[in-house]
Image 1 (cartoon, rainbow, N blue to C red):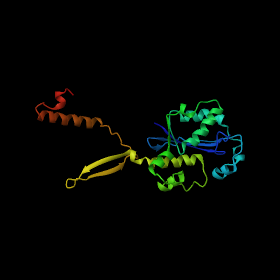
Image 2: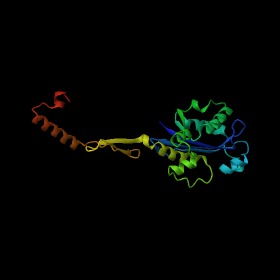
Image 3: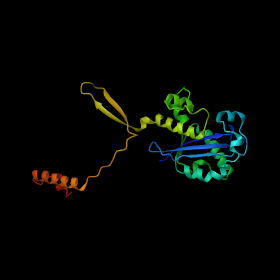
Image 4: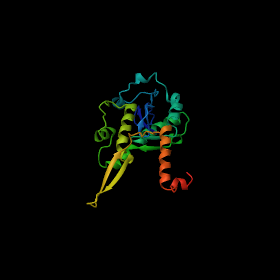
Length: 234
């Protein structure tokens, strides 16, 4: 399943009170690897950002004047997100804004287009109860480099979130090998992360196949024609 890490920047904190999305950033993951197939838009929100919001994202009202409106990019956004698992930090905030934007252009809620939503803030609270679980705090805790994050930016935050998620879920993609020590009853567990390995498929050439058949024939002859593959007709 495609996984899309999504973040937005907005003019303020309340979609219900008229605040709008000014930036959407999405990063695609396939088999726990970044594909480079990202989606990024700055949007004209048709209103000014609140002063407090400007301090967070630093995107000026003037910069957004000539950017496309959400209605102009909605088809591309929905096509990109179609059937994907969408991963968001503090999902209710971004979903509230996305659903309001969809409502304004006469489209159904986002859940009608995607597979499901994962909220990494909920995951983090389960994993690190009682601790700060902002994106910056998680980057520090999980040793994800966020030195370039002086201001909030949707695409950068989506990229950081992908790194954070991979670190948070690393144990789900490990091979657990158990080896029982003959002199101790304790079982040793060795965790090996295989997410970065790609196993090559090597096909035997014609000469190797001929040699293989010759070895099988020798084994069959030595057994008096009683080999399993001869008995089964293989």
